[in-house]
Length: 405
Length: 146
Image 1: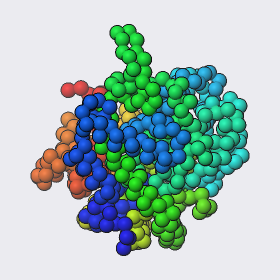
Image 2: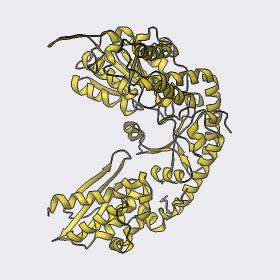
Image 3: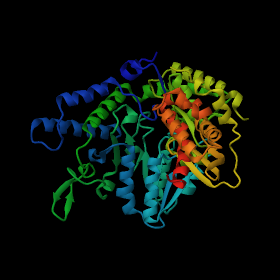
Image 4: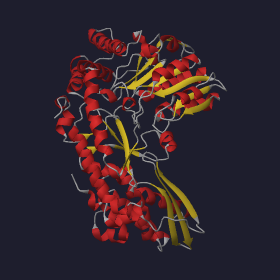
C-alpha cells in the first residue's frame, strides 16, 4: 500500500493501476478542495471589480503567480504568464517571438524527440519565415550525444527547442549543456518542461533557459491551466499573442497600446480556478518534497524495469543509463499491435497509453508506428507493476500462436 | 472486467495476423487510403469491379488486430456482391458497431463480419473496426452516386 493514495480520491474509488500519469496526473484532495473553496468563497473576475470580492480574487490569482515564480526561481514575477497548457505556451513563443525574429537562412534546431506541440509550431515558423528546420537525432541509447548537439547547433541557429524529458522514451536531456552551447552560438532556447517539472526541481535562472513551458494537469493541478516562463527582456520586446480584454492600456478606434507584463499576454478572463488549483498543487509538491517524490518513483521504476526486462517477448525503448531515465517506459510485445495490448491491459484494470504519443517524427526515426507506454508517479505501487506484468503475460498468451516470427 | 477472448476470437486472430487478403491486386479500378490519425492505423484498399459487382478486393497497411481483421473479413463478405448489396451490408455493419442494430436476424447478412459485434462494447476500439468499412463506403459513394 502506498501512503499517498489516501490523498487521491480517484485512486481510492477506482481499483485500477493508473500508469498514464505522463498523459495527466490524478489530483489530490487538497487541489480539489482549493478549487471548491475558491468558488464557494472568492469567485469574482480578477482585475475587473472595484469591490472587495474581486480584489480578493485578484490577490489569489496574483499571489499564485508569485508562488510559481518562486517555485521555478524566476527573477521577476511578471516573467510568469498563464496559458491553457504547455501547447499554448509553446505556440505563444512560436507566434510572438519566432515569426517576428527569424529570417530566411536562419536555423531552428529541435530534438527529434519533441512532442508535436514543440515541433508543429516551429514548422509553421520555418515555412512563413524561410528559416531552415534541423533535427538532433538520438543514438542507440535513445539519447542525444554531445557530438550530435554540437554538430546541429551552429552560428546560424536562432532557436533551439528541447524537451527536458521525452514523453515517449523517458530520456532526461542534458538541457544545461544544450542551453550553454546554444547561447555560445547566439541562439534562444525553448525548454518544454511538461514531462519534467512534476519530477524534478527546475531553476530557470540556474538553467539560464530563455523560455520554458509546462502544463498544470501533468503536475497534480486541474486541466486547462499552463505556464509560460520567459526572460523579461525577451517578453517585453514581443508582440501580444491574443488580443482583447485586460491586455490593453489605451484603445482608440484605429490604435491600441498594450498593458505591461504579464497582462500583455493574458487576454480575456483567465482560468482562475485552474490557477488556484495549480497553486495548491505546488503546495502539495513542496510539502512532499522532490526528494521524496524521486525516491518513491525510483523504487517503482527500478522494480518495473527489473520485471519488464524478464519478459523476453518484450522490446523496451529505454536508455541503459538509469541516471538519464525518468519514469516513462515505452515497450512493445514483438509482433502485437500496442492498441491490442492496451485493450487487454484495460480489461485487467491497467491504464497505459498506446499510440504515437504525439511524437510521430521520433517514432518514424525509430522505424516503428507506435508503442505502449507506462508512466509512473509517486502514487504508484509495486502492485500496479505486478498487474501490468500479469496483463502483458495474458496478452502475449492470447497472441502467441498467431505471431508471425 | 470483461474477458476479451470474445473479441480476440480465433477468426479475428487468424485474419489479423495472417490474412490471405493482404496482397497486391492486379488491374484494380479503385484504390483508397484509410487512416486513423490519432492511432496511426493505415490501410490501402484496392477494389476491382465487374459491371456493378465487386469482383475482387485486397489491402495493405498496418494497424491493430481489430482494424486488420475487420478489413480482411470485410473483403470476404463484400466480394461478389452488387454495389447495392454492399452498401446495405456496410450500413448494417456500421449500425451494429454503433449499437443501433442488435437484432440477430438482421445481422445475418454480415456473414463472418458479425464476429465484431462485441467491439460495440469497447468504445476505444470502434474506430479500428470501422476503418475499412468507411474506406469502402467512400469508394462506392464517390464513384457510384445514387
